[in-house]
Image 1 (cartoon, rainbow, N blue to C red):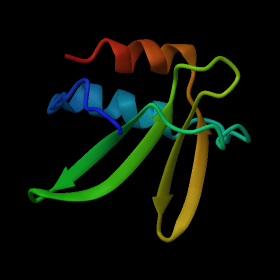
Image 2 (tube, rainbow, N blue to C red; image 1 turned 180 degrees about the vertical axis):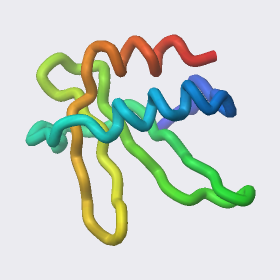
Image 3 (cartoon, helix red, strand yellow; image 1 turned 45 degrees about the horizontal axis):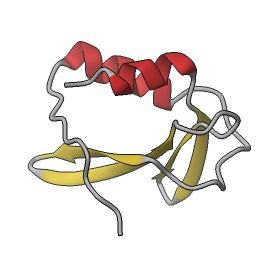
Length: 88
């Protein structure tokens, strides 16, 4: 069973923009090794999108999300991992 280890509510526009830049990075072919967490994006108090991520396995660090019916997988860099790990 999965457990929720951390919940962060992020409203700082600069941090949200920085996070979006990480998610929109280069495509990744390494995305079939599971996920460590999920980012939920809200609009008008409803979830508008989910971005799943894997960051705790060297060689398989990525974001995965669906946009307009298409699945995207992008690289999760060391800098992105540090950013996500540092969110409070």
